[in-house]
Image (cartoon, rainbow, N blue to C red; front, side, top):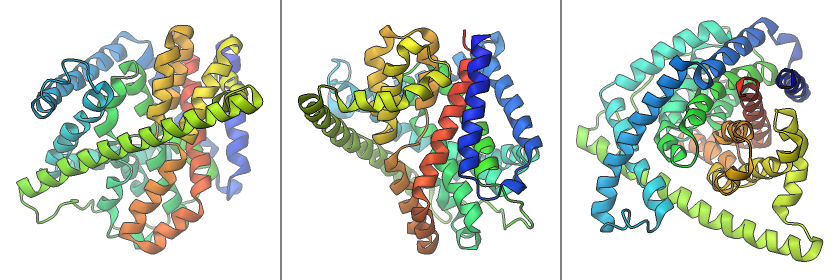
Length: 395
């Protein structure tokens, strides 16, 4: 009964917070919101509790484990066995595999496999969520291509999109994660929570956006999903994706160095002045939200601190904090927090998404920058909703 109480309470809180930011409450279609929520709960139970769902998760995790082993071959060759000796563990084991997985995504994109998958799944989703096909395609392509690379596929129609559609496209990119980085997450979190979060975030995004940014699509835009590398040879494309993957790894490494150092300095400053760390203060701010989504009261402060860390820095910093305290949490709290962490909802993502769009269409990029905080607000609600749904089905 406690699980159900927290779930209902979380739904009420998320709905109220979403309504406060809603642009046009009269256009909210409750039927689709309820329909999506029911499907999301069933999917959460399937992936986290049923034997078939857990079997799928194990197979998916095994697939990525195999990919990571192949990636390790290239890493060991370049770094002379440092990987096997446990040196520079995070960079070599977590970040470097992004290069290999990025190359695989490029190959699937080059041979038109990904556009077919995106179109097929997006068409089915558009029947379920009541949104336009473009928005549904974008939810799948963001998951596969990544929050910045994704917009290249829509470069020819970006200039034609309304403000409402641009918000939906950008918010979706911030609320999901890219497949190229999933392998890295699986080295830091239990794979079943990563897989569940991928699916739950997609449905949570549809639900939250249906409330915050409701609108009807009168006429579909040109939905031809362009290849991001038309006219390139196979090896030109492959080189570009490999470099793009390495760029992502280096950017994440640089951000981690900067954020961890900054948080450490701020923690020391707060501790010396106030007797409590900066993360401790943030923990109190997120404490009620952690409790609302189902974390036991005696663990909510610790969990709230990690949730806040993810918001102000990024998910990798927060995942490392979770690893340090996982032994102090119940499996239920670990699962709820893990699902919350698997998304790009943080302050730095505002600049990443706006910059990616600005590089393709300056006017639309400026528009996205103007509603940057609202993007973060909506994507954080998505993470809360996904974590609450996970909390409902976790023992």
